[in-house]
Amino acid sequence: MLQIQVLRQNKEEVKERLATKLFSNTALVDDILTLDEQVRKLKVDSETLQATMNAASKEIGILMGKGEKEKADTKKQELASIKSSIQQLTEQLAVAEKQLQDELVKLPNLPHSSVPKGKTPEENEVVKEAGGKPVLYAGALPHWELIKKYDLVDFETGAKITGSGFPLYKGRGAKLQRALIQYFLDYNTAAGYTEYLPPLLVNEATAYGTGQLPDKEGQMYHATADNFYLIPTAEVPVTNIYRDAIVKETDLPIKMTAYTPCFRREAGSFGADVRGLNRVHQFDKVEIIQLTNPAKSYTVLEEMVQHVEQLLQSLQLPYRILRLCGGDMSFASALTYDFEVFSAAQQKWLEVSSVSNFETFQSNRMKVRYKNAEGKTQLLHTLNGSSLALPRIVAALLENNQSADGIVLPEVLQRYFGETHIR
Image (cartoon, rainbow, N blue to C red; front, side, top):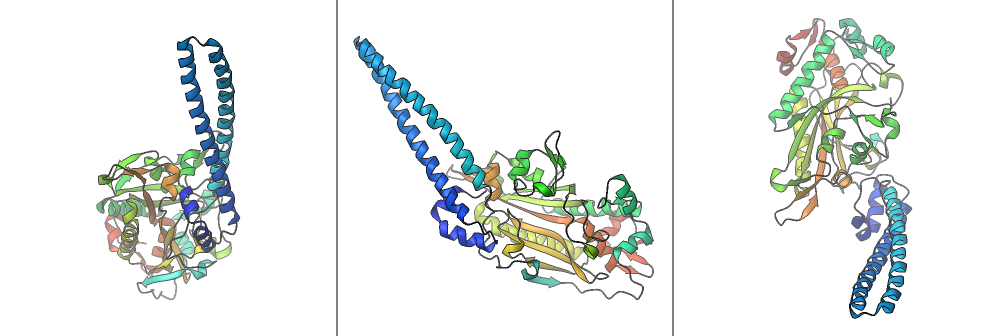
């Protein structure tokens, strides 16, 4: 959530930056500032009346001490009227503050100045491309055929158990998932991230804190009886660990990692884009999260990008890094880098990670703060990234490493998987 003082001080700049995100309802900024003026006026009026009431109470005491009961009774009647007015103002203020909050949460985060303008993913900026694209042998197959050939995932039984988009991993397919998860966690903890295993369902306050509500209700599975939401990513419960907390500046940065299944109702596009593991409703992902000093957050963002890049390099996958344009960014992000790996059999790039800086957008919702050396309490910056999402990593590993003799696993995975090949 944007801080109201940012709108007060930079109204026109806020509108310009929101336009970069293709947010067209810039009149909402004016409406919010009008509500903000109403709230501040009601507060001033309430405080003025409170001061008048305090003075009247003191005067009544003086009059009673002098034995001037008649004058004191008159003041008591005035005091009752003042109390009634304060009560009315208090009720009006509560309504106005809720209206202000309800409107403020409708504004997306402001994009960083480096965010390129654009409307579609095709307008994202390619920052880097690395790793040679493999040339496959004549009998090469897409991963959904390789999955059948080596009996790794059973989509039909998964659909029977739950529905389309819920794969059932089996045998070496399940073992490969476990190997990747363990490798990713070990890689992250070796870099100083503390591992967590969070709940997979969260309450409304938690989903609100990271910006899933009120923006993404339709994308999350909702357990209505208890009003819990299945998590779309570990970012949601893990970042909320520090909700309503004040941490010491010396404890920063706080680095966390977690493996969780992720659940997303939206399936995306159609046809080849959703075949096999390209897009599913339940998938496994390892996440990295950092809470950091605002002055250092963009340095931290670059470090997290490098961390994910080196992880992809260790898997020997061709990849590229994109800086997302305004029209392709999430509601809560200020700057996002996407990682894509090249799928040789499909001849297309597949997104496997997003690394984002949210600045104070999430911390303002969650009241995640730190106390600086001068003792002043300030909002932290929050960042997160996929390290990594498994389905498309598996798709690329299977397709790019296939041969007539089976699928050759990257060296870093072999000790986790216990074999050099899937045959």
